Length: 303
Image (cartoon, rainbow, N blue to C red; front, side, top):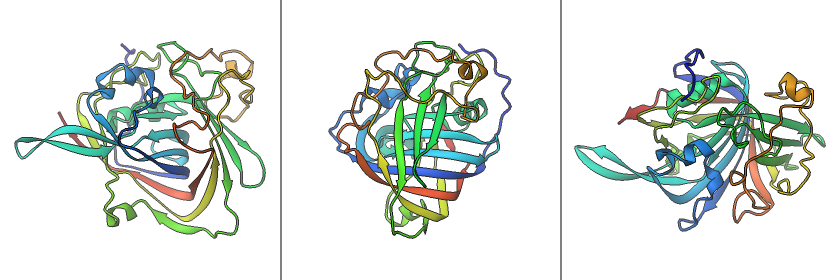
């Protein structure tokens, strides 16, 4: 069990400002969900077994929040597609399908704790690296705290869980975009999240929950552009030549900067696919939302 948390509560609704990088992909209904779609803690709990994966529209987002009720932070999230679950409706049990965030990393404890208690979002800590390459191109690497075999999740792994290089698509002007358009297209972007298990984090940032939660996040920006996403991953047996943490990197600690504190990764919690997700090609088309607004309401909770 985690220690009693002293992390302050930041209740919803939340309105945040950010830069959002995203790409979407389709998962066939018969394609099994890869094991790395869940963090180790959630994979060993009812969170991963209380709903059935059905495929559909999947997405990955990397978000750099500049303003939020808990301060700036970075985030990487995976929505692999739809999940089928049972819910009471009109006194009867009905089977429904909705999207679900199955795995997500953030760069600081305040949002980790509050994302879990507010909406059942299974947040865990990670160190983020953003490396500028050619003009407009950025390489993103995410180094998780929950893949080292240490149940207290106190140290970032030396191996990235996800690597993506985001480059602008030439000659296409920026345009307005909002996820509200999904409703007009008959697409349900509601997230339905099962209850979370409690973790053993020293800082108390991994609380558990007991109720289900439905939440409809909104994202919109008047400065949206098309991006290429290069998904070629760091080879499993590579010497982990990813850049050492630099001053200014999210979650870079004094120990990291001194060259210690990077633990060895445990097996079975990473993607072994060349382009991260099974069946995806190296190059994907995505979106970059600059000066974006992200909204998270109170959500609906039930037993």
